[in-house]
Image (cartoon, rainbow, N blue to C red):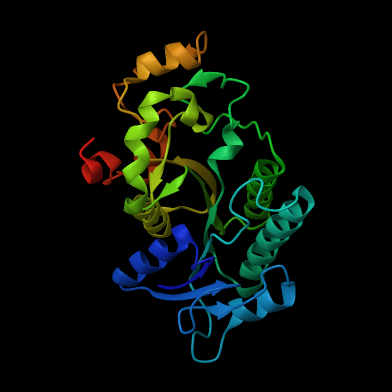
Length: 281
């Protein structure tokens, strides 16, 4: 396919672009930053620029089959609340609307694990948490929730449109794993997302699967690694940090507590990478 990736210069975006190209797709990276020759510079908060870029860009493309929308201020606290809301909400609206105007029917967009209630100062209603939990606790996560709602309404307007929103966990590259063994000393250090993470390569796998398999309509999925960042067993961690929270099903020893069952079942998502393979944990 011919695919636009917004935010393809970012941490997850770089791996997604590389993965999709390795699979034989033609990929155009739209971003505000990036090395010359790897990106088309577009201000995604400018609706005119976005519509023009989606419709065609000189030698890069004259129309695309799909859009992977990853561009955003990527976390809470990196900008003021007002700027986070303005940038992320406007960017997503512009990209989805441009796709509709251009007749692009297949979209994958980055939501966030923060929608689940991070940083879990209020404990989650149950563990493992899944897509049924929606409890934004910051402006950043509120915008991600609103982006999901926007997508759901757009597919209602256009029954042929497919939008898949991934609630990505904390994205990691192999170079990040060296510090993971340190987390065992203090389970509260990483309790803010139930000790979760996602290897960027597995994040890219999820994107590829959605592009190939997603049906018309809107779906959201938690996307995390198959394990936690901890060596300590889940039962011990939950009893110490989240006593009294309902346990739903088998926690496993180190299985992810951000449930990826829906992505496994509906997309065939199967995380292949673990920090344990990199540092011998």
